[in-house]
Length: 430
Image (tube, rainbow, N blue to C red):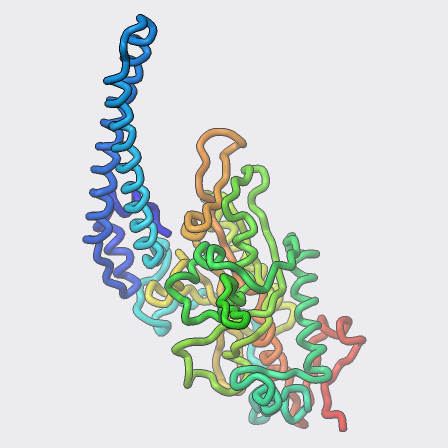
């Protein structure tokens, strides 16, 4: 969330920056609550000063063995008033906190202004599209023809927007997970973690998923009891919350973690979009990269994290591009986001396969993740970053489409063959 002092001291700037996202922010409620809070604090501090003075008077009377009944009674009355004001302050502060939970992050100065994805800025491209020499099929047709992908039976099991991988299809998914984790841990310096796949509300609030995006999440219910447990939409949520309510020493930063998890999203409001294939499912696998960094180095770490995600695409020899999301397309919690988009021959275009974001202190303030400079002095909020390294299902489909052959077989990228017992080509069996 945004810093209360920032909104209070620079209201016009905050309104202007949020407007770049296409959102009209009205500060009337915030400013009224903030004014009420400061007035209550002033009254409370005045009473505390009176109480301190009365305490000194009571001590003097007792020392001189004089009657202190009247000032003791008066001090008790003042203490009760202080308790009342302090209670009101807490109530107002909670209202301020709740108001700020719905306000998005301020875009970084380098984020291009724009209203939609059409105005995102392309930064670079890597590689070239494959020269297939025939009309390419999409991954759904290829996967089903090869007997490695089955949407019909998945729908029978769980309904729409689920996938069933079989045989080498399932093994390829698992190979990709292991390959991605190996690259990030052995080459790029990440520490692997295996977090819970369900989280509480506090964790989702910390990353910005709640309360605004509750409709996009699956919540657990046991019998008639709704639990404070939600299936994770991404490993970003549990991994970022590893250090919730903690103070980290500067010497530990940056911390780089990676995790494989399944991800669960209700995709509310997305019906009619990408209903065919693996692009948009309720359940999918992902390897996530998460960093905790000092404020002064977080944008350097953002570039590094993005390059780490790109490494996977380069090793798989998949053509892709990097774009900077414009202000109107940047996610709620992010200050700046790079999207990696992989080339899909069947669509003759690029599709997102990773988003790499710097949230600055936005998530850390919500989750109360702080650091102590040089191990001493006043604590401050650190910066959090994350990116997909990569979305596994989308990588799977990119391989199937880009490595397809005219006869319907699929060549396996060389870097994955050691994970598949040396298998070089996926062919229809039986």
